[in-house]
Image 1 (cartoon, rainbow, N blue to C red):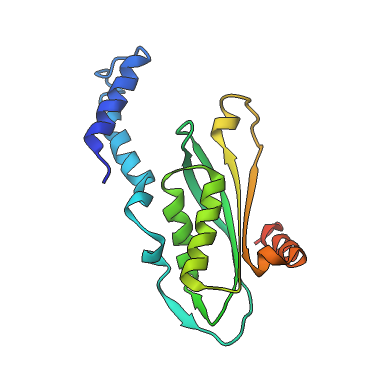
Image 2: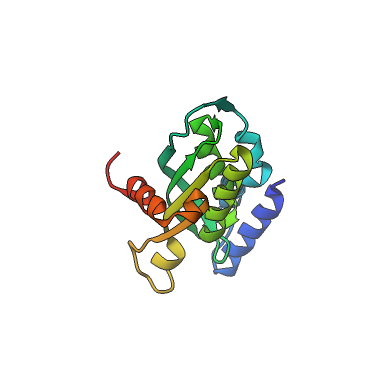
Amino acid sequence: MIDQDKIKEAAKLIIEAIGEDPDREGLKATPDRIGRMYEEIMAGYAKKPEDVLNTFFTVEEDSPVIEKDITFYSMCEHHMLPFFGKAHIAYIPNGKVVGISKLARCVEIYARRLQIQEHMTMQIADAIEEALDPKGVLVVLDAEHTCMTMRGIKKPGSRTLTIATRGVFAEDAALTDRYLALMTQGGN
């Protein structure tokens, strides 16, 4: 899916456009490295959430599942600069749960694409809701955007928090507040 040759060509053009010599010793292999890098960091295009949200276990109880502090790295679709942070996921089962590593894999699929954080938050919630049909889903992404911290307004340390609620979490603000506190509190 990723066309490394086009990426290498584009990288060489950028090197030339900024006034550098693409044949200089330190830059000669840069287009090749950039091609391999993009194949890795854009790997989410080759996967679907249903490919990973597919290992279920039957449960009778509806005790909530919380997976927090899932580190992710993504690329802003507006400036093609990284944004990175933590994803926190809670869901209330409705007869089945998914293997917990699958939640992190779902985050990874959406993070490894050109993204905006708002869409990524909703996509993760929708994928979990579709795969599990839980009583409720709550997804929180907390990220730093380098398009804001290293360029433009230049506000290092600023973070963006996005939240998606489905089911009982969308219907009950007190429940959502309780789980938000559990998911975003410090410590592991």
